[in-house]
Image 1 (tube, rainbow, N blue to C red):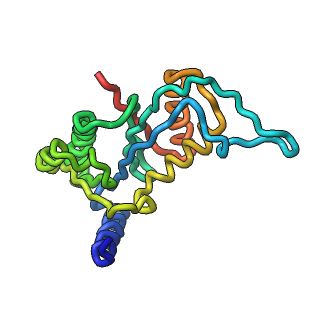
Image 2: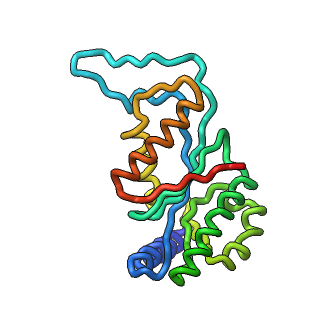
Image 3: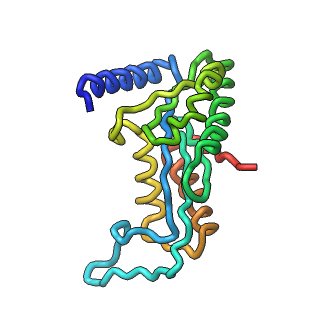
Length: 202
């Protein structure tokens, strides 16, 4: 990776954070994370001197993907889906965020900037075709440099969810796992004192 490009991106990111602190923009972080019905054993604990043991069903079930948009200290918007996020679904979810951005622009005069990593679905042709329309609604996308998860602050929320809410638990099916994810996100929101909204697919 070009060092000058990385430095320029980092400076732009720092500037966005400053503008957000000053109330000039609404800054959010977007990412996807996945969960399965079984958890890695390294997220579990046991009493000293006792062997760690987890009973797991043979059927692991399908992955539940969480699409999250986090505004630090303010809100966490998310959607749950089975399997990998596809471009049409990503556009649908971003249209939801564009409506929220349009309302924010009308009420506060702030544009919304959502920070993205470089996942292929985020840069698909279908997604890029929507950028101008989203910008007209007050929503802009800022891409992080490749391999920079430390700059995507939503990663901290995934850590809390998996380490504090789901660790060491085994679920019978995807429905039970989904309920646990919803409850975990709501519990985290209470602890960190921010609002939560879940997108419901039609």
